[in-house]
Image (cartoon, rainbow, N blue to C red):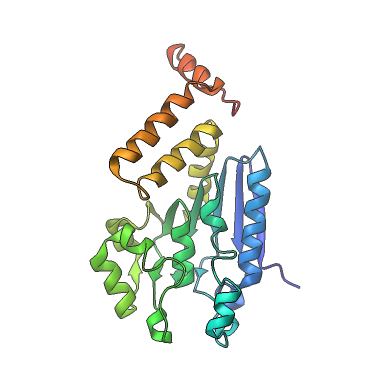
Length: 257
């Protein structure tokens, strides 16, 4: 049986690859549970400092598997806690997660990419929330995360007309962090992930928590959270090492403590 989720390690970076090419990497429970298990493993590995999630050159994920969910009724979707039960594992990862998107990221694929901390897009990438064509609506954050990324007008446009957004527009709109030539996408994403993984992991986690707090609280509350995290960093050996290395004009040797 083909493994629908593959994992690799590249130094301090954990790579998760969705592997359903025959279905354009459509997402079902096997895929999502596999991603969750891979994240659990990389989170537990002290040698991993950053995680990358990707698909293939044709699709990051072309959506949730329609065949898998077409016969759901309301009570089954509700009682099985569809989406909430397992999709949210990406969102709760404490280590940074980068989505490397080439080809289609549609519906649940777009939503899964948005659950990651940032998206690096190949110049071939296409993003969309076409659920309205199926008589339903986004259910994994498309009506909530997308407006926060691209603004109300573009989110309304994408969700109500089902149009796709290309990589250039996605970068201009704030959905993606970088656009990279398709043949260099994974290489450049792994390089960026390695940079992150080379810093102090406790500080990286503090930065992630602090930036996320900006979307969940008022400015004053967010600033207080940031300030307390900043103060706490002075209890780290890595802070002592980082500042000493700067003064001594050498590279810091962080030990994640």
